[in-house]
Image (cartoon, rainbow, N blue to C red; front, side, top):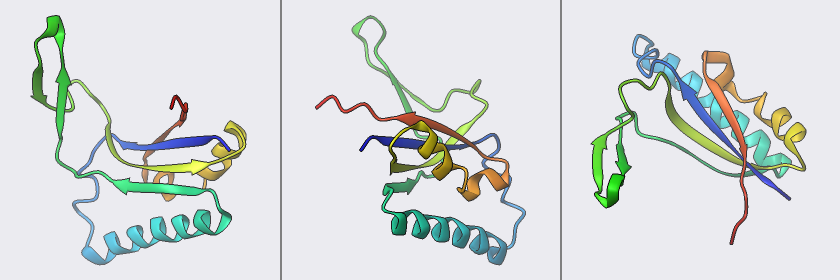
Length: 118
């Protein structure tokens, strides 16, 4: 069965900074509950939250490795994590993704089919 990557992004990674620890925990529990649902459905493959710091960007222009703090300043969105799911097609993957709590908090999900090249 094809696999689909749900890239979870948001424009402002600090938009939860004004929430209490209890409110943040409630949101985390919503994600865990949704993950449990897709695990029970048999569509869950894996997931991880990415650290809030920016990470690194690597480029190799003219054969010279260049490493910078990333993402670039002009980037409007930050990828905060991902889910990998199995689905028959994009329609089923969309149905899985639409239940993700990320959409309830102003987040965006980019849905991409994983191409098996190995």
